[in-house]
Image 1 (cartoon, rainbow, N blue to C red):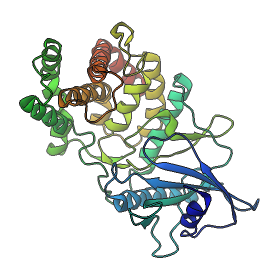
Image 2 (image 1 turned 90 degrees about the horizontal axis):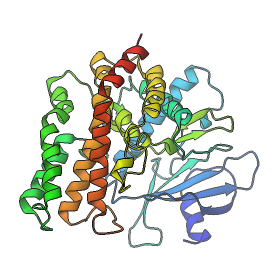
Image 3 (image 1 turned 135 degrees about the vertical axis):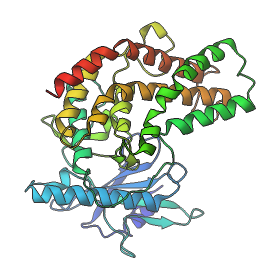
Length: 371
């Protein structure tokens, strides 16, 4: 899109200043993102973003969730006397007409879709590397994010239905096994993997059972806890958590386990050398220390004692999802070669096996953190 088209979209929001430049920002795979520069030194720059409504079909719900979450955090920061709040929580700019935090342009028009505008956080960076230092910061930041929202008075919507529901993911797998659309179910290696999945299925679905029994609460979670979903200042202090589209009610295991699934794997999730797939206890310990430092004030004993379960749950869940896609004929994730999804599933299974070897060590470490 050219400057004039993008400038017209920005003009639908109640921004301040004179727009001098609009350029693509980042390398996001889901939303289209642009940096909007203003000419005046005393006016903020902005981030213009088109929300992918194929991934998030109810954009109005997404933005209502984000409004509730950022407003709640902003009020708490103001009560604490925190300075420079626009660097500590995202601020979205309302549309000139209607006051919503997004505008919709007809899909058959230039620039059609759902757009939003937020204040750009100056002098801030994201990190890609996962090491003990950044993992501890991530644990502290995501734990604090949950803690700040533990008393939010608004019930949020589920922006991606059953996103981290293990029972649902197993139902998907069982359905594709019955249909076998790609003719892959009878492969010996698939049968071996299915055996490993089924022997753990009951245990891995216990979060849903505990939720129905009323012993495990759902809380407001980020649900995409990657290290690059935080902004750092130039002194390596965490400023705020970003990328809030997936914020929704879930068990706290989502934020805790999903970070460790990617951050604590010695290799990438599609590494084909299974001998190299190992669970990094240094990352586990650093992230857990940071997380419990921020979150233990509101966590229930049942949530804390099940953190090792959360660590195992997400490699298991992703193994199920990758195998489901392999048996479906590779319809969901992009594949670079025919066995790519099976390799991904096998990688996650081996990560799970490595995690299980550390079970006692994880339990002991968490107990020590709580003393």
